[in-house]
Image (tube, rainbow, N blue to C red):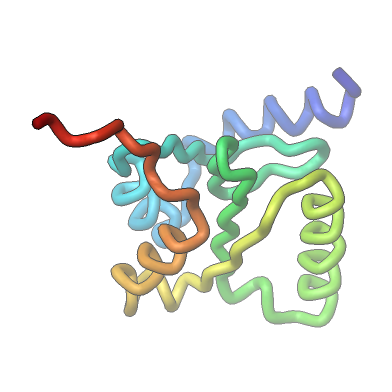
Length: 124
């Protein structure tokens, strides 16, 4: 493991104890989803994804007000490119969307996940 990745893993443990209000709300719903496992504060290379579904290679990033400056927009773009180059899809959602439209946000996330596996033919 590269040293940067080791630092990211240690920092991710800290971040799991310090979720933002929007992340707490979203996590309260994502953690109980059936058939798909979502992880919070999941290290991916040198970055830490707010939420990740490893099976679907989907990262969910929660963007607050600090993501509006030109510097932060450029950083987010570079981060997204880095993650996409490693085979991940990145879905960004704002704090405001979580606070005001949580059900729509969850529907959008669900639409990006694979359908549940088929369980075989129904009994005769």
